[in-house]
Image (cartoon, rainbow, N blue to C red):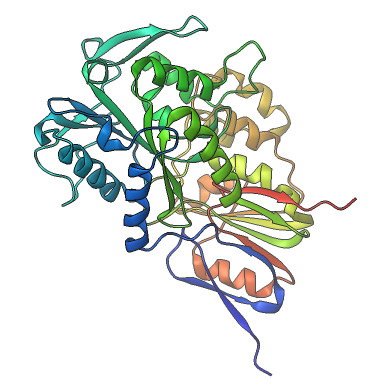
Length: 404
């Protein structure tokens, strides 16, 4: 009798994984990406029928200077930016009056859909001459933003949706603030923060407030698919935040029915070229731990993992893990501090494999078992009595079904 085989795709690696169908207990791929024709139609609909806001073509007039703020990694950004520009020019805005603002150090993105007349700007948060005071928030924060935004007639942020520890749902509202703010503010927000105190403003609420002060109410949000775009939303920022939250929750929720012997978590999209952060990896480990049975194994497939920062390198050199979390306090201002603490405190009930581009000694010093390639991972899956595979696990809200 021929054994039934299932072919499973992980966005993090090339080619499918072949798995015995009878031992595959569960598999999660994430929402499917829209085909090009459907995507084009969806973009047009989002721009022409936005949530609680006039169509894009009606919020500008001839002579306006418009700045589009583009978040790096936004899926299918050329199609979206092209459609936005098309509506702006149809309303009388000249191409030379449109600028595209990117993140610090980012080069002009290459695409035949981006007209050469559209100026490219890269944010320079450390240059005070390139910043302008906007306002104070209700919490008393003085807000400085890129001066091109303060001087523009219309600002339209374009970004993609995902969870981020301590922030809530990350989206285009954060593309304006803190991303185009001054360096101290960006540094503060880029740290992974512990649970927010009741007296502190919600990061999303604060970002929305800054967007309102700037007048950047019309925004475009991309719901990522397993690879590419699953949906495009546009509209008034306050309405968009709620709609995006509901859409993300519906599209990226995976609930396993039972625990498994081998859990494989694919992180990142190799075709996008963006590195996966240690914050994303360690947060995913914690959220997915409940899916592994005692003594079971977890494998993280993440070839695009960023190199360890100062806190993680310190952790890798420690001989006594029991004092690691306390000793790491001297690195609390480092971007990878929370990831290092989370890794130091992680309760390992079984081995954790890591398929990445990092050297084996680095992987081992951080407490992982190096997985050399997809072939080795496939062999593990073929030998397991029961397995569960989760694609784009860093985006997925993972949980285990509970019974009363």
